[in-house]
Picture 1 (cartoon, each protein chain N blue to C red):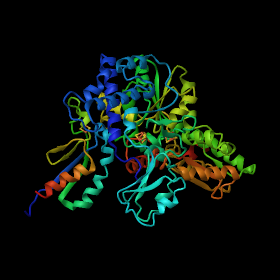
Picture 2: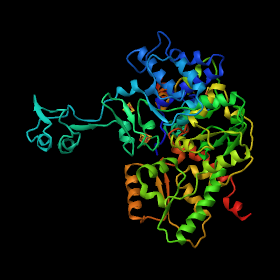
Picture 3: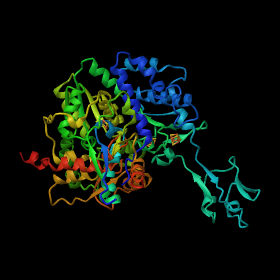
Picture 4: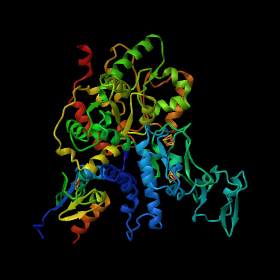
Length: 88
Length: 488
Ligand code: SF4
Ligand code: SF4
Ligand code: FES
């Protein structure tokens, strides 16, 4: 329990995700550390490469919480995913 | 400030634009346009918002019509999108009224009215019944009931109910419009009265169904580029806070879309600043009480349509877009000019200016990048040939215009800037008062921006306000002051 690994949150700030809504997820980069302290590591990252497959741009913005991909991400969805991991 | 909160409706609007651009760039534009609603809701797919797949597709079709730059109101249900796409290719000028309202989506939202909720206790005092001047309220089965035929929506009953059991159901667009230009008709479809509308775009942002659309000119721009025309992009200052890259990368990204040149409208803002500072000084010397700025298209429409008394007090200086377009057309008379705008209002300004051929907003630009797979942060840099000043680049932020003008005024001139940060019913009342009385007790240099926060808060921006402001401010800080231009 003591050596628990940090949860990593990657908010895609590539162009597709940014235009489809991750512009509004930038606040997570400030609010997540404030809320969860050092249990969660959050950063904005360049294109995760998910938007260019087929028509998958329509499911942007993408956020990765560890290895799980959140499609059409919103602040609420991301926080829920973090909570779910922490309470496991 | 919660300007520009994330909205599911913008996601849909942007998705349609991406699909439309992809369709244009494909080898079968008309057929692929016809298929957009079916591609988005294929047979057997989930129906996320509406009663059935057919209704969803009907609404997506309407949204595509707006994307093609046409009035949804004028299109028959039976007309195919492919036919409309063909028509869009033929037009030589954009339609005059910049907005259109989705019929199907709009009818779902209830008209404004006074409504008695379950909280009604059927009390003995019955102040509602006694207050209503129109005899519209009676008590049936121990609860107040409003007769819609008699109710005049005055709201008096709601004010007197001790349980706050009566509420007014508002229509978001009607409530947001500062000049009463949009209202539901008998069918429940919101209609915009373009004689009154100042194109502020507030209804576009306010409608929770995303029913109010800008008519896009994206097809017109794509067509001109495809035809090999010399298309020149003119970027409003607000764009520099919109996308995750540097201004020089953005310039390169836009050049790669097929534009012949990309210039900053901040360059024209520098001309505005110099002209307006000279005008202000001149006016004060002649005893003027105050002057307002004249760069915001929404404000200009407001003065022209609703506050004619303000005309003598509004600066005669032209807008940054005006000067920029003039410079471009002088250098390249054969150029097709496209203004990259943060708002609807500039579409109206562009239509009145023969030097501005088309307008695209930041949603449309973003959709274009998605459609061709541009990652702007991976683009190389390309510097602007003419570098605008710090002050000109800061026009996009509330207070920025007045500050720029002030920079060039003599220090001993008694200058008192006042900032109107967004037009709403209250600020319009204030402006009417200043115009009528011929004085403004708060100051003498009044900057007016229709959008809260300035152009960065425009209805068609993509970045959130705070992040956009930070990004733009970084750019502004790294630029040279306009004072240097004047001294040379
Ligand atoms: S808010 Fe206005 S435009 Fe939107 S659905 Fe309601 S009436 Fe129609
Ligand atoms: S654009 Fe502005 S003025 Fe025109 S109808 Fe909408 S809210 Fe009213
Ligand atoms: S931009 Fe986010 S996955 Fe490509």
